[in-house]
Image 1 (tube, helix red, strand yellow):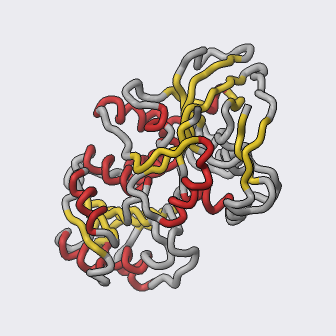
Image 2: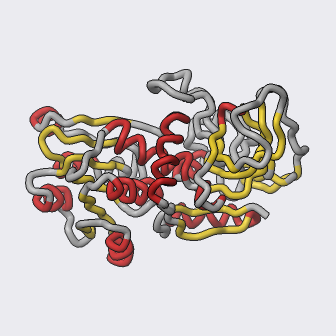
Length: 335
């Protein structure tokens, strides 16, 4: 079978497509024929050697969807022909986050989904909503689940709350969609008026071009009548101070991404004077995933896909991610 590896060095150019033996599931395992994969910023960082992985070669990418084509002895929770997603954290089934729960991550401490067939523990996969195609379902395990956990497991978003999402990448667009399902008002920031128009078409209640409105945190606070309830913080270094400005007293900042950099000085007086809740999070458990997919199924929600690449064009997909030119998710479809 075919697979992509980061092989020569930690770079997009260091990737190569290889032929490897097709794996066979053992007791308690399943074989999944991957039909589609989606890209996350974390995948780009990993391929560039910034993901904490040290050993080459590595099969990258955490997010995929496919069909169960082999079942090992003792497996009962899924069956041949089931449409499933592998879980990002293979060891986090339920319960609170812990070091043990986060130990096994696809495309990092475990081989990723850029392989035509992969063997997984049967506990590490979950069925996908029937109305979703494989490319749509492939967007869920990291970006979808991170947005879901942020809003409903950590922030407990309620109807009438205000939610601010930064940019129009995968997590942010999922957060927009989920927040609207919950009856919240959503503010979207972007440097592109075209992308802001598309966000409004998805239900955004207010949009801010952060190049035109440099004090966008203050503008968001004013629009929301005194401060935003929940902020999905994906920017990192260049956005966190604005998030502090935008948040209401007692508000929540959900720290998810580092698109603009890793470190920033924090205005501590703002943090404690506003009594803010700052929560760092990454992805979630299988139980959270299944809550999310149940909601997606009930509401017939469709993930937003910007562009689909063929399996041979994985480097081109990564370069699009690197340029930041996408709206929603970038997907790779397998032959």
